Length: 470
Image (cartoon, rainbow, N blue to C red; front, side, top):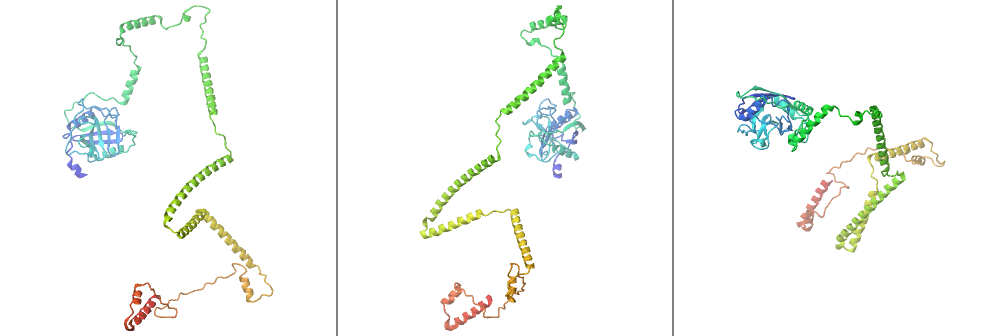
């Protein structure tokens, strides 16, 4: 990062933005971008950015503000129109914390809006004017704002705002501020209230017959001023037969209205109930009907499976017939027998239950309990005196006592030591292993030795082999 800072030119001018997320110190490149810096400084002096929001946030890219309307479409420059772009070779979008002008998507269309970069943005090079940078630890306040949640239109759900702007070092001594101050949201609301309270005036000049309408309006006003409040003929007449009392009092009118409301509510509830009752309701099915429906569904599924299996079997038969076309009758019979055995084996496997771990554990525990019960029963039988015939005695009696039950035999541990045979000793148990297929043995059989030498050699080889194998 130090290399990047060294390449950038020296700044001139400093501005402090007090935001809802803390202060942001900005240093300006007034020499490299004089128009953009002058515009920004003068708007800050005129309090143009006070109480404005950052209306756009793209995480990892930028955070944008400077629009007094807060919509992203407003904001004017001090020049009365959009000013031109100012690009510099040593100012590049290569890091976060850079301050640049926001335009209308076209070149030389800069106004009051600006944005801070949140990372590298080389695609913005020579499209937006860089005129400042965030300095010191205040960059962390910008990053705090960048962590806020946004909606689908890249607008923060709780937009951060600029509360106040302050010029710490003004690079332009000749700036003359205007008496223009943008209207805040509260001021706009007050103006709306004032406008709504004002009386509407009739402009008769807009009408083609405006002069006649204006004369009629003046006559009506004069008559109303003389007569005062408008009254009916009943009120003006002095006939004693006509009563001047009100037919229905205000309290009675209120009671009648309340009654009508209650009656209307009752009628609405009745209509709702009638509509609900009129709707077709499925009859309550019994358990048997539910079971029958389930069985029907299962039978339909089975029929579909059987049809599918039949089709598969037919296809397999065709494939097998094509394969067996080159075989003889005897070979076909053997192949068919083999296939039948395979099918029977597969059917048996499918019929076997596939037990889960819990079922297997239950089965093993039951077997263990049965085995333990047998042992207990046999121990009880052993405790009882065995009833043998009187004629048997001696060794026969012992054999019978041992063979009465399954568990009558005693277990004997026999230490059997493995005997290791010496390879040099040749006994009657040593046998010669001779492989007639071996190529060496074939050669020996085909080429007999000269003058009885081969026989002696063969005997020596046999003795060696027997030695190795034993």
